[in-house]
Length: 403
Image (tube, rainbow, N blue to C red; front, side, top):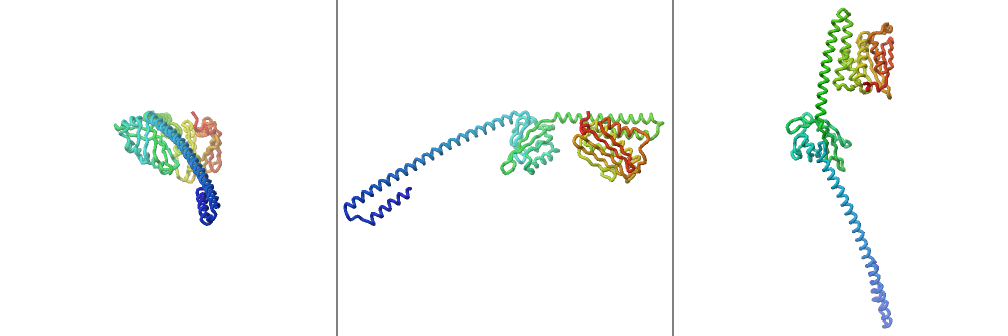
């Protein structure tokens, strides 16, 4: 607009110079017209300037309003941040568990009073020192490995670790350490937050329980030895085969008890149960045994019944079946479908089975009657010429929930 006005004034000046008036009356009229044009130009210029000033004032007012709104939002955000900081500070200082904030390299930046008291320090004594200086030497490596996983696996932001800490007086404190990390936009770790719960009492109780279980196991074995001695004296006039069979069955019970004690008399892996029962009959990994099935847990009572059945099957195979020759093979498979569990013992490569046994002994009672009554199972025994096949099927829940 300003450029257009300037151009109009220049054109009027150029026209006046190019066409000078020769008549005084005409000159007066021209000057009056030019004056009117100049007045119009000035009025237009004033209007343009006034509009520009008004727009500038409106822009300044809008900018001031936006700035005020921004300042309000910033103040509100600052208040929220300050509130969150106060809440975290209160939680950090008064938490009933130990807490610490650690840098990516493992240096303690902040330690809450509970964690410091747990280890017999003041917080200031622990801060700015590496966490490994408070860790039991035997647990330093697994702590370092867990910490490295946070750096190596970007998708892993937390882990839980049971480890031993060292108090200022040298005593050991067991801690259940829950670790979470805070990452920056590039995925790099900025801070690590640790929550430490003192589980020393629980660990002491577990150690005491394990010691008592080993003592009970030791006394039970002594009792089994005593029973074995009594059986030998009582059955002195009986056949040697009776004594050998009775002894092997006691050993099978002892093997079951050993593995259950190692697992705190709770559930055990079915593979471990099978290997413990059949170890006396051959080396695992050799050509005579093939084992196949999913990982399943077996309760203590279920392990007793299933273990005795496996022992009787192995004993029969060693006497008459595939384990009585170097070329024989035993294939043990199991599977779980829904709430149904099935196991198969199949022998091949041994002496031909001419006919089923004419009498039912204790072994048959174990692999048939005992399994049926213990698990509510369906049991099938096939004395095929190529080798014995034993099958059982029962609810999967019976495998790990028997009282």
